[in-house]
Length: 226
Image 1: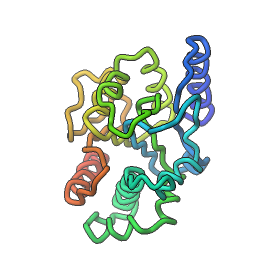
Image 2: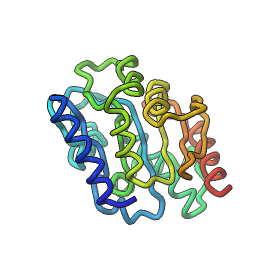
Image 3: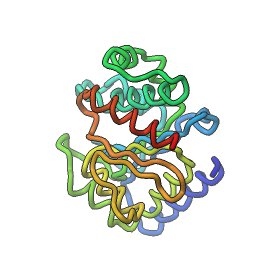
Image 4: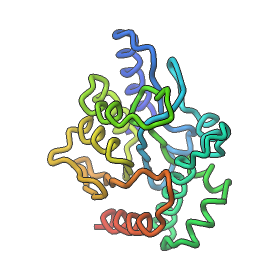
């Protein structure tokens, strides 16, 4: 895959939106060309955004606002997600084992987290933004059976990932559907897709669980090397 293939997949999504007069859609993808040159291509699939109307691009400025909680919502999902990805990359490339202390260091290292944002993809699987704060489990899970689901999966595949981390049970249900995983991936388990990349299910990273994250990182690293 390549950047050109991603742009083709994105155009397919745009064509669908226009043809079906879909008025609300959140676009996600690499926020920097650094992603295409990354040693390890990682995708974090979370669930939904809040409070956006129309066709919106989750670009670097938007995700940086989420990273620093510019809206004052006390939400740490993006920061925790990037911390997991940063720790995973350190484990794979540098051999640094994750630990409570290591996560604490990464969590407050804004430069590292922004570099991680540039080198990975943060992707909310529900393409419509939630107008309320409470999670809409049914709407997220329903993406798995939606008409646009195959287009979202086409975008994700175009990133040519080596690792996909999908968070939350609703997010996992949606991913199982759009990727037509058979047998489906179970919560907190992992699998190697027929295309070669690893998919890892985790609990939604809205709260820290350093022991679980460390175990997950070791599990992914072991599967990647097998």
